[in-house]
Length: 345
Image 1: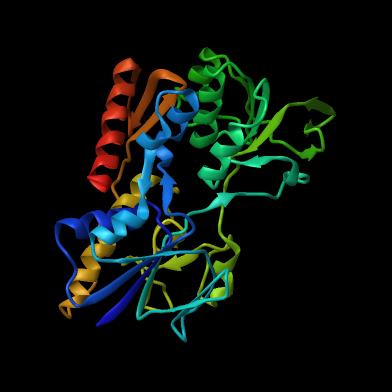
Image 2: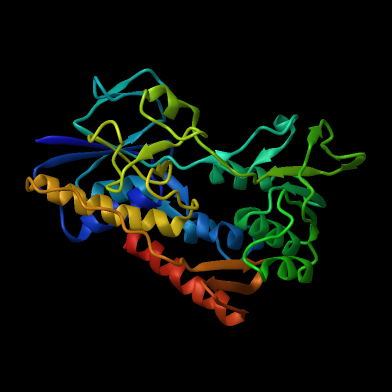
């Protein structure tokens, strides 16, 4: 019986487990290793910060989900992977054997800004959310104006904080995002990346300095350092390189989702793509159990963006279409709750 190890409980692996609830995988023993048994759903985190959701409404019981498909849940964090020996080493020194492994550990905010140690990273979400409950939120700065940074900025503004959002990009995406941020009262600084953070914390941009109660890191995605140490091919940033079947270009027994780069067509890092990757991975697992070829990942041409705006108001964008309003928030709320229910029901 093949031993399949899932490292991390990102969107792709949650999609695999959800699929296995409907149709079990024959001829395999499944194990999931993750750093926490309960994890927050990223899509509902801004709503939690804004006060629209209780924690238990946005929490996924990963251990229970694994058990529901007769999988073993292992509490721990992988720090080293040896694909040749087919061993994964955990932070506590223990080792896990596997025949096939799938890696879905996500990414962390880039910490290249000098003084990044004086800022609070928005990931992992659980540690971030707990810290927010214990600190002053009068004056908050956020480094990074991607969707995560923008949603958190508007959620904190809804809570009453004065929020300054620094962006490396001169233009924010999607197009309605900048007007929405300003309408909600966020002080947006497009084209003004944070150059340094000093104790205080103090933000330095050019000759300007400004002190805050809290600085948050929501910078561009950076890979976990141990991925390079696998010896598997990586892109220039350190994300694993995979072929169209989401398997390592150098080792067919190693698959990866949100911490990988497609060699044929690099994609933005998005939960929507990760969910589709999970569907592809589980289809490949079923095929390979029958001695058939793995399935190729076919990313959708246009993905749907739903951006919460602090209050019960949201933006929607897909291709050349966009919309905004309270109804978009309720649509997003419906989809988020449906996703949670599919994992916990």
